Length: 123
Image 1 (tube, one colour):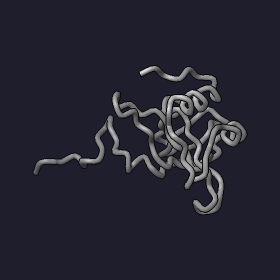
Image 2 (cartoon, helix red, strand yellow):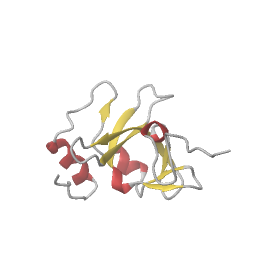
Image 3 (tube, helix red, strand yellow):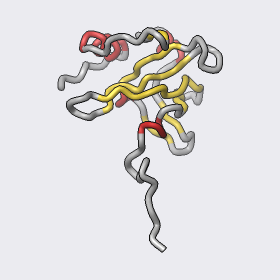
Image 4 (cartoon, rainbow, N blue to C red):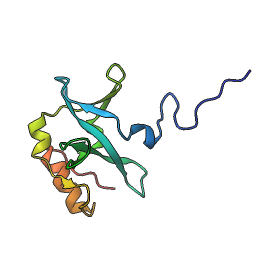
């Protein structure tokens, strides 16, 4: 019998639908939220932001907080991502209501990256 790999993931790769809903923690093991979706650059194919869903109650009234993708590290023991941020840093970051997504243009990207003290990537 030949073993098959699930098409949505391998040892190194994972399908976006498996990432969506994954919990995000800080190093103090506080749950900051969950990955709502991933913003991918159309030309380069690189993930640019993980959009963190945070606040609210059972997804109602929660806001969305883009975090530069490279800030997240997957932790197999937590079965989730870890980002070196406090809840206060996330709360003060650029964010939007679920029904009011911004244009993810360069200006918005610079504001997100700038909040975290990072340079916006030039593609």
